[in-house]
Image (cartoon, rainbow, N blue to C red; front, side, top):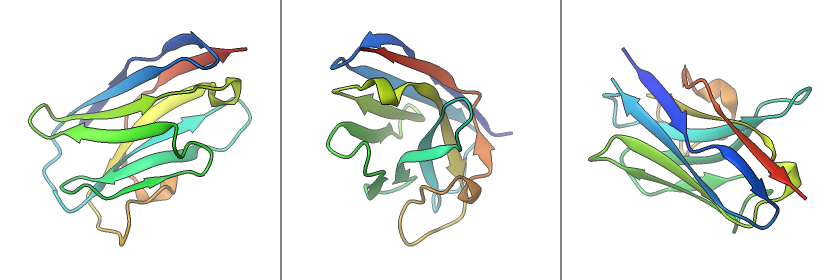
Length: 126
């Protein structure tokens, strides 16, 4: 049984940093990808960053490039999202997700993923 559990959310002022973690269990397919998504009330779920489960190739949304970094620790079965230079528009519920399917690049579309965590709230004040 696959489980994804996010942590590390919180409230921060604009310009600050947070690091989100996603503890995973039950993922066995190394061909897939893992990603971070976010959703604000009334908005579509947006792909933020993604990484191959067994490689270093990454994908980023334009809105977070050069500010956010996705990484993973295979030994700890944990996915991370380092968020720097946070802006009020980064405020959202953040979710981690996983898929066992292979794509030519780590996907940022939510429908590519079939495993989801419950989310962690990030609030950035101006």
